[in-house]
Image (cartoon, rainbow over the protein chains, first blue to last red):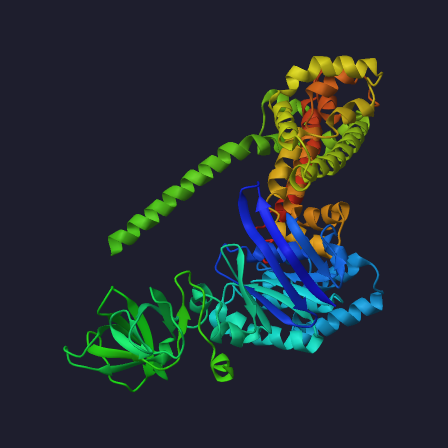
Length: 362
Length: 276
């Protein structure tokens, strides 16, 4: 009982490849997030799972049944669209009941029960006679959710459902969607470009970029052990600092010619890159002789400050997170060093960091 | 400050005078027509338009002395059938052009447009020959069959259907609606305003037909109202202008009703909330 993608590809006109060689297994009942920058093919992938878009190559199977040529309705799934796709001439209640009525294998009393339950679950009972135009954006979103809830399909696809909402509502709906998914035991395949949504909700994340799968893993794996530079810099705010480095004597490496740090693993002899999260950078005030960087701007976030720093060499800029009571100002000269938590990428951007467990086991 | 206000007021006054003048120019013939329909023909003939001998005699005469009721019935039947047929066929063909993928879709649509560019007058002779061959002359059928569908209607509805959000189609696909269900439940409801517009347009077009029925109908059994009106004028040696005016007023009434009903639906924002 799972959804399996095997070497799925999509090409338009023979030369324009939108997706190539996507393989994944989505477990029943899990919250699976497909994330990537716009234009990476994530919506296309979702549409192919739904059956709205033909696949050019490969195989999609749902519950051990190949569904490549199956019509969307026979795949037994529901979909929540970015634009909600509500029927403007139907009331909220009828919008939710629409799919059940169309399928015609549900009795009238069961339809009523399901619709009322679904509306109760998304707190729309009082508004059931309204038309979509009389609802706010968040309420319309709830109607779209209720439609998915009312359906008996166990797989639900969502295509950036929160991108039209304002920031606060988005956080609220995020929690509601997550709670609904857990409560109903849905297999939820969720497309987003927002790494925060992916990190906060997913059981597993698929990162898509350049029409290829970059990595599939749990949020922790993706954050702690990114497969490559792209994945590392896609997750985390502000993004990870990636700096050029060269090998120095012993265990030391020279980062951007600005500071040295100790690494306990083999590194390439020629050029490579290190990634250091903003909260792993240490900065301290220094006079001009000792300094290796200067502060560009500072953002105050309440409990912490983000310091944007210009390094002395190569015009490289980095970001660091410091305590909110630390007294740095713009144009201060500072000395930047790093704690012993880093990622190493080879010249192709592939993560070659030896994980701590490996070191312990060795 | 005061002078500024004065200017604004003057401007407003001028604007309204202009609007009222234009309204009078446009509406005067209409009101004169209605007014004279209440006057005896003798007064009209004398040019005594401000006579006070108002009565409904002309209307009574129109209904009792002429077959105007029969004409009205003929026209109503023909216009209604034409309207319904055009709504059905045009919306179906427009649906095909928008939502079905088939070979030569664009070519066929271009052919549709070409027929639209040909004026009806240019088709009259071949059409007449055809219906004569088929033995349809002087019959309801001859007034209905050539107008069962219209290229303009298809074109208009196609443009409107293309505005239907594609997500609604996709959502319907996932729910398992077939083409007919999607057409009937979603597309028609979503494009209600365009359907009403086309309905009003084709009803009025049919109601106001003159040239084609004049050529193809000869008896009161199938004569339509516009030709009937002309008939009233020429049949009698002495033209009863009061009565003719009353008949004209009678046949305008349905068109006004259609426009009023139609206007009620021309509210914007009916489809708001479907997609963001």
